[in-house]
Image (tube, rainbow, N blue to C red; front, side):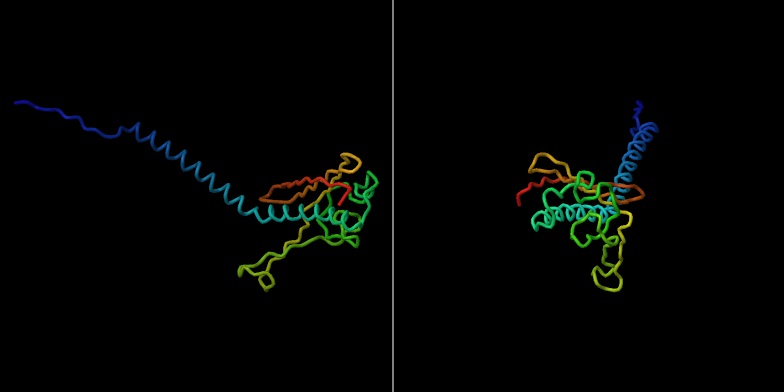
Length: 174
């Protein structure tokens, strides 16, 4: 009579523990990606707003040049004999001259978001006063007829202070 011994195959305790460790690391990585995505999506309206306000400031400088509201000699920062405030200032609406970040700027800007119904102009709209936003326009002379404009917007997002910066070149000629 012969007895055959068959080995039982399966997972050992060590193999199970290693697989659980690999799975745990994967789940933690996925949860971190999820948390990062939620943080990005909650700050994205402010990022879009900062982008729009920076573009608006650049357009304001170009419009001042094109409409001859100010001369080429005035298209500098105050320290260089121009009209643009040197320091970062609260985000205000343009004053009587129609140019942003000059000494005659008015009240702090505000922005209206649609409420739960998704429409602007209804009773559930939300108004955001941009009192935590700042804007700085820096103009650097590159040559007699070419300057570099840098607009820096600083804004709060997720308990941090973030900045958005855009740079453009402007020439004396429209």
